[in-house]
Length: 160
Image (spheres, rainbow, N blue to C red):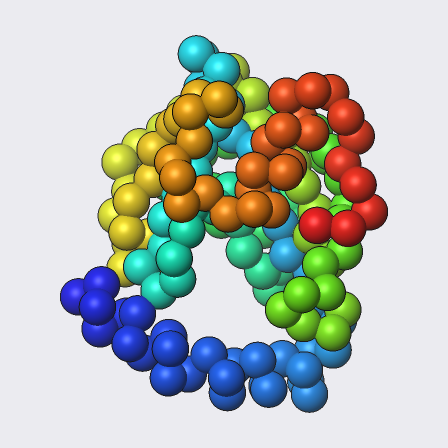
């Protein structure tokens, strides 16, 4: 099934990018650094693209960045924020690599702020918690950079 999803994405990705450039020239996304009680970080590996990423995704029409990150971490890894929890916003970064004007809100979710349930999805091939010093080899460059900044206490930069 993962191969079907990957093939489907490879075929449709150029059309999707064209659609976004024409109809959504400004995009907004969210990513979250989710920590467990051992200080490890949650990473996800999608079924349609290579690499390990921080969980997250696009902010949909009529949705706030906070509600989007809440939805995305639940959909991708079964991370359910406790009632009344507001993750800390670590940064608001621009990412012009994929789209003309893409922006990403980066959040921090601490180990006492959520409960977890087992979640399966066609979008996510696997997810897990990893020590920041022992990330999977396929962890993306941007994900590594954000985690090293977080670990060192360096504020998030303007650019992803």
